[in-house]
Image 1 (cartoon, helix red, strand yellow):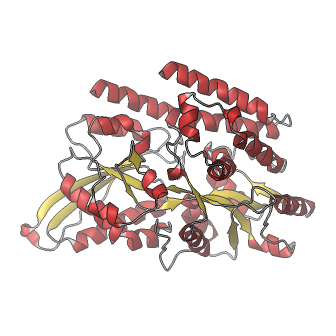
Image 2: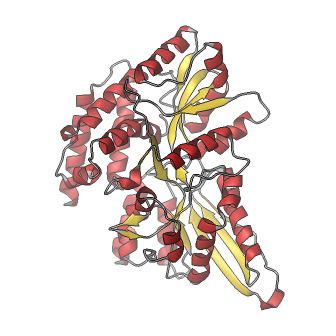
Length: 448
């Protein structure tokens, strides 16, 4: 089993890449131990060491984790806790280093990640079954939130907050050009043209990060598939029972996306998230399709300036269909084999019940229940309100997510589709989907 697990982790390291949004591909791999936090009670307190493996490269999220850890330690003077927060780059080092730690005798107590991506971790017993956990059950979360931390019908993770994406726009440019947030896709295209006519680039893109083509296409595919009742779409594509051409959502989505790609900047394919944010916040582009995971970085860039931005969910047709795409963001698994599993479990239970305010106040992330800290930016409050309203398309409501290999290939071909527009020789949706399907077929043949 250990040999199998090691092999799987090597596959994950190579294939997963940016399998989940929220990490910066340029963040250095590093092990950053947190300072020990002695609890009151002196020698009567139990010495406890808890290791947390994660890939939160953003400074705001790392500070948020430390804030929750401190709050828990303050609330539990019976423990003298030393925290070791180990952060690695998600795209290169996280999985190999986690594999090494799990194979050693000094295993981490807490591991960041969606359990649906790691079925063999679950099978090997490195992840605690939380299906009957009274704290999680007491949260009364909707099916989508629980689906994102489940595998084969059982819960294996603690969900903390949610991520989403959509159009962030420069309020001053919209005001100067007397533009309104579009209610239809035609209105969105008209806004793009009006902005271009004013000598401003409509879009800042970050296709140097493969996740950005993914999140732009998700808006079409997830929303359309759920409206069509195809909740098993990814499961059937991975099994080979269905082909991409069997679902109209992929072709329709590529056609819609292609209309917006007509306004790509020359740097669209090389910019990573931070470079694209600089284009956006400097006023060189009026809009950026962006995710909630980077709001802290965005806020840091504009601190002290008069830059103001708004947010809207991209409409996908002229009937005004628009649903906020939602996926659990920070979620953590607990290792039952670790030395201080019981205290780690207690900590995670504290986090989802009492530690949310400490986390949200520093990380600026919206919580799963739709609540946010009082200091959260306006856009975070907007996102939380939409989530709370239920007007969402939640990834956790699909019967299964794309696994790591399919996610990587999906992103590779979407990036190639965008690049074809940048090169002036746009691929047709049929060409893109045919190439993608050939790769999917190869995956299925090689993996049985």
